[in-house]
Image 1 (cartoon, rainbow, N blue to C red):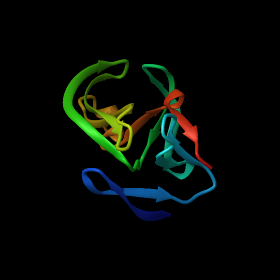
Image 2 (image 1 turned 180 degrees about the horizontal axis):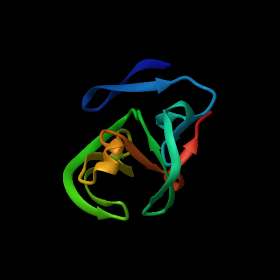
Image 3 (image 1 turned 90 degrees about the horizontal axis):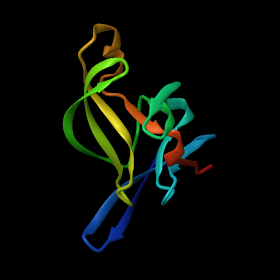
Image 4 (image 1 turned 180 degrees about the vertical axis):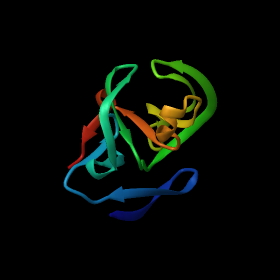
Length: 120
């Protein structure tokens, strides 16, 4: 479930989503809500800082530019994702997988475990 909220900032009105659930993952720097255990597709991923999770849905992130990266499972087009509040890098979003067997990742998000904290 999503709970919506507005927060005033110096640049005007900033929209931020607050999540409800039994376990909510947030940014480890500012605790901004990112996703829930219900959105985890797999915990069997590796990021730059160790273990990472593949999520179906992530909120409160901004995407960087698309770039092609050679990963252990082949060539992918990805975008780094950043916390919308503190701008910390959190992981990446899969835009395109060039290997047929990896297409299930397209449109999904990797959040690195070390960069997350339990908000609830």
